[in-house]
Amino acid sequence: MSFSLISAKGRHPRESVAPFRRHEAGTQPDSFYPAYRATRLRAPSQPLIYLPHTLSEVTGPVFGHSDIHPHDQDLTLQHKGEPLGERIIVRGRVVDGDGHAVSNSLIEIWQANAAGRYAHSKDDHPAPLDPNFTGTGRTLTDNDGFYSFVTIKPGAYPWRNHENAWRPAHIHFSLFGPAFVTRLITQMYFPGDPLFEYDPILQSIPDEGARQRLVSKFDLETTKPEWALGYRFDIVLRGRESTPFEE
Amino acid sequence: MDLTPTPSQTVGPYLHLGLTDARSISCIARDGAKGERVRLTFRVVDGDGVPVPDAMIELWQADSEGNYASQDGSADGTGFRGFGRLATAEDSSCTFETIRPGCVPGPGKTVQAPHINVSVLGRGILKRLATRVYFAGDTANASDPVLTSVPENRRATLLAQPDPARPNNWVFDVHLRGGRETVFFDV
Image (cartoon, rainbow over all chains, first blue to last red):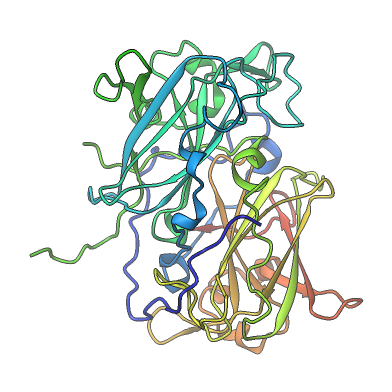
């Protein structure tokens, strides 16, 4: 087990239960989206039961620098040689619904290689594996909520959801934020991908504006001359219902 | 900047690569942690009752005194962390080592019965499913504000059951869909 939480003494104060805001209709995917076949047997059929936020919902695990290894942030340095494909930098800022930085918060990513193949025993897509690429990374956001990864642009790959089904290139993102209810697992896409309209996973989000929030933007500022293109992907976690007045 | 929260997407079939291969936490409370030790096994099945071998369970719980670990770490100073995560195995199960949590304050002056907060993730799950594990037979269950808000005929889906053959072992079945569907919460 290479994963540890900070373990100094301290408990979450019992007095502070500031609830988080609920999502607006259409901005999150529907659980049951038959075009994405696997939801047909895995999405609940009963309505969710409203849970008021208690201490159980507004607290959450905290991770520290001891959870991060030196090459976790650069997926091109994890093996002897350099992986094949287009080197990219993915950078962004994590904020809450009030625009406040989510600092020192764990982000984990995983992705296919440049050929569209995951280094996973269950992936049988006949595209080459890259001995120099595992496709997993993690980092903590800095004090201002910024993060960055160096990686390889993942390839699109086929899946068996429907006839001639292909997933648009994407990177999986996992974030914790400050509470059990701010947990977010999502996927980052690349601008202008012609596969978006055919992808039921992306299309499961009803609102077009919300779907666009998952598409990174080419960013010249992040791009490093003579070295790698940069993409910007900002992430918004839920904010609190009422924020204390700031002086 | 638009401050609408970023949409969720499924973890997909290869979640292990990023989240559990090297990053599982099966032991939520190490040996030194105070409280009654329990082994809690989850089994996940789909709407046809077919085992789900590619799901992931995440847990978040209070210590035996009902305190959640904070920014500064464990509440009781004994290695209790409160967070665990495991992928389900081929037989659709996974087992955590932990302690039975204490009662946690609820809304108003209510007291919540010992419970563990659960996220269920997996291929075909577009957004995290939130549920809770309570312990069957706990006298505090009868006045728990969350459990009593659930229609009576569905409350049993939130109860872990003791394994009669193995002391301190509990089993919690997650039915993603169908007649025995587990209660999932709008959090």
